[in-house]
Amino acid sequence: MKRFLAVILALGLLVTAFAGCGSIDKTADTTSAAAVEPVSSAAPAATVAEPVPEKKDVTISYMLSQGWLEDSEKELGDKFAAETGIKVDYQVIPSAQYFNVLLTKLNAGECTDIFGSQSGKFDIVSQLNIEKNAVDLTGAEWIQRMDPLVTDQVSVNSKVYGLTIWDTSPSFPVVYNKKIFDKLGLSIPKTYADLKNVCTKILESGVIPIYEPVADGWHHVLWFPDIGPRYEELEPGLIEKLNNNQTKFEDSAAMELALTQLQEMAKLGFFGKNFLSATGADTENNLGTGKYAMALSGFSTPSRIQEAVPEAKATDFGFFEIPLADNQILCMQPSGPSRFIYSASKYIEEAKEYFTYITKQENLQEYFLDKDTKKSNLCFTGVKNKLTDEMNNYISSYEKKGSYLQIQVKYLNPQWMDIGKDMVAMFTGAMTPKDMLKSIDKRRADQAKAAKDPLWAQ
Image 1 (cartoon, helix red, strand yellow):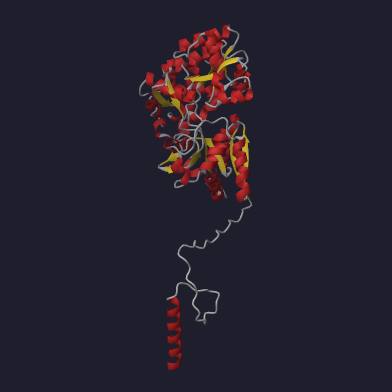
Image 2 (tube, rainbow, N blue to C red):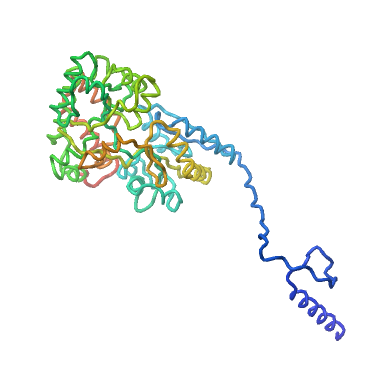
């Protein structure tokens, strides 16, 4: 026993002696007493290569409305698949059918892994039942870089459920041909009377005043809600009363006035003879060739006109706000098409990976802004926008700013396509502006009751 203790003691002293040296060659015979040169403190620390994550063999499905998917995002999706093994199956549904298809799938419990829908803090609750049907994304790094006003529109009870990558520049200004205006001695209209005069003179010159793609089903609706702040300005408290079921759309004189003016524009031929069959795909060509003088469109339209019609220059086009009801309030848009992860998906983590990947700063810049000719800015910090002097001058020329009606008033945005059908009926004389407002009220009441909104209980 004493001999055993002596051996242990000797080994302990030997280890202590080696510990006093700078470092040792761990591949050498530990019984050797040879000292090893100390490693210089200036030498770089040894690095351990991070393990390369194993690629997955998974396909996640993503359903969205026509017009929401750009080629640049599909290109980024291919890059994501190459790096991770997670493929993305983009399922694009015609816009006129999309919302009904989405609700059917959600109600049947058979939705895609990711689904698209317009944001709006009222609608994602009443229409999508988002707390049940979507994954809580609160805590994701990219949320810290998303515009707080945009984040608010995809949040419920302080939890974030959606990802919005959208151009939050002013919503659909009127894009006008400056050369045509200059030739005819016209100024930017600031009232409806001004607009009527401008359109009349343009029509008399042989040019169609406004290109309006009604056949798309959704675009012509923009004329009505995009001047929402003007309705509130003319009738203070209107929005709060609508949300509390204390008044109706049909009771608003301001709304009826705007629709009456819009109906008159169609009757006077300001949209041309075939506007009911016009499509958005022809916007740039029609403006670039000078066949039409104006269109309700986005900031990127001038640059896209230049691409479509080389002889036309982006600098030939300017912007102004819709002057129906004499509106002079700049309409901003903190909401837009957004991505949600289905709560019953088998691939929630993979879908989150996709969100993380596409929101990398360099991917936002390259694939969602630089390569997307339809966007001039994004709702994320750190992205270099493409706003021109013309755009900035337009924004600064309006003292008042507000948000469009469909994100301020409950039970309005989900009936967008139905409003479009009513508006066509109004254009053709089958409905009056008052009839159209009554139709909106009826659908709002039906939606409120379906949502069991206590303010509509009686």
